[in-house]
Length: 361
Image (cartoon, rainbow, N blue to C red; front, side, top):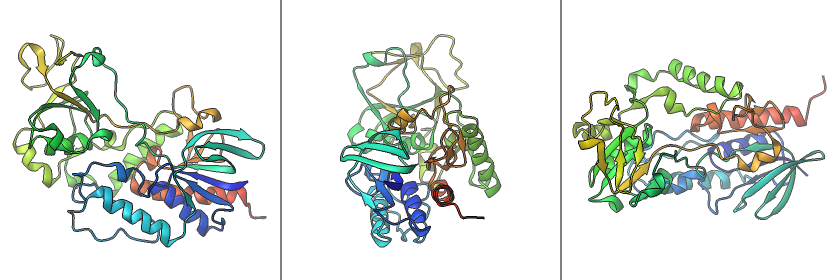
């Protein structure tokens, strides 16, 4: 039986594995990382080709090795996976792939993991599966009647395939802002969000403000509530590469529609337009709906452990679940960022070292 099974080899999983090995857990015999992807890179390898290192919001250093210097023009879905691959090789981290963990259940002395490559047993778990494999698309009346194309940001491959179309971008996060900028260069776009966006300048993001944001997200998971995305707390930041789109009026936002039709969307007559110009007859014809509506934590394989509260969230104490302190979630809630994932990896490794190998007083 393994002492620790780490599920996922993205930023959080690699960080946890690094610290577990440094704290004395023997690779492969005592700690093992199971990753569903055939290649290193976590979710980064699945990002769209037009996302360059100039576009990303920053990649935190993995512990012990800084991110290589980037010229900015490199494709993020190649540059970051190469960094992860080198990191795994450099520290000889015990990663097996492709191994998809399908379910985890309690057994005597720990847990049994049913995977695509057989069963594993472990005394404890570090779950680092992120969110990429659980894209979220909200339901609206008529969604099944739309005859155009619907895709999520997880399916997006570049603006060229949308050239000449009228694209409706749904969502108020950073991805929506970025994709609107590049799609609007080749297509007509309309942006809709549930709430008016809150724009912040770079000066707003002080270290103190960052700590306040993390504290607000952490407060929710401590209460057992589903975590909110960090950007829902921080607001949006318009970067220099998106200024041209702003100058073209791309970020004029409309309120969320009431229903989806066969060829577009409609709003109710009493819709409050918040100063924006209402479409003719409150209807809009579109070719494609791009759902930039975020992701949910990929935790279905942990369902047999019954970790969720009636509120739908998982009550957390740091990285440990309150129901079972042998189960740690990294890259979840307040650690759902590259910097947060690094810190969570160390916190989980140290907590499990203390739990599994207590030092006599």
